[in-house]
Every structure is written in structure tokens, then in C-alpha cells.
Image (tube, rainbow, N blue to C red; front, side, top):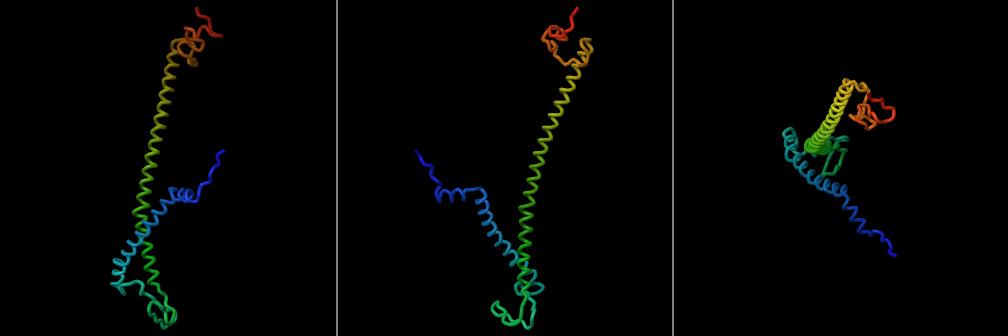
Length: 185
């Protein structure tokens, strides 16, 4: 008798790590961390100097005082209650830039690609339906022509749907040898 071994801790952990979505998430976190550095550099190197043309170069220094007088030493409020809205503005700009880059460089192209794929698939299915419908129409026309020819020959009328030998298998157009066949003279 062989006993079934329960998967060990390492096998379970390995299976967990090798799942597709875990690897995808890990890649996304690494790329996101690298991308955050790029966005922070753009904010500090481009946007802050542009804002600095109108005031201080660093957005973190923009603040208002809720309770006067505000004295800040070494980044800590010693007196008063400062509202550091420049820090919030800097973080908001970083977020907006990140969201815009992700949307315009990742989401929009992927949506366009998926829309093209869907359109191709639908076009292929539509073409297949047209082919099937046209084949059906052609077969109906052939049937109608055969029925008309068979009816014009005077053998049985347009309601006859049997083949040349008819449903009875005989040589007469009506199937001359089957039950209910009309006698031939």
C-alpha cells in the first residue's frame, strides 16, 4: 500500500509563487517602484522649477499658518499651526502625472489593441455568417430550380421533393415501385 504524501510547505510555497498572477503582480510592483522614481524626478526637476519662477523652488515650502505666529525649525512646527499645502500640492501633481502617463501610455494603447482584436474577431464571425447565409440561399435557389424543373416536366408537380428516382427507389419520377405509387402506362 502506498500512502499519498501531502504536499510539503516548500512545494505549496513554490506552487503559490509560480502562479501567473503572483508573478505578474511582482513585476508590476517592481516597475511601479521604478516608475515612481521617474515621476518624482520630473516633479522635482521640471515642475518645481516652473513653479519656482513664481515663488519658492520647492513646493514643500509653501504653507499657511492657521494659528499665528508659525515658526518651523528643522521641519517641525515650534510655534503656531502651519498648514503645509505645498506638500499636498506636490503629492497631487505626482499622482496626476503618474495617472496621466499610465493612462496615455498603457491603458489607452491596450484598449485600442483589444478593440482591434474584438473588431477582427467580430468581422471574422460576421464573414462566416455571411458565407453560411449565402450558402443557404444558394441551396434554396437550387432546390427551387429543381422543383420548378421537375414540376415543368409534368411529373408530380412542384410539391415533389424526392430525387430523380423518387422516395420509392424506382426509375419513375414518382418512385414507381414504392407503396402508393401511381401506375405507369
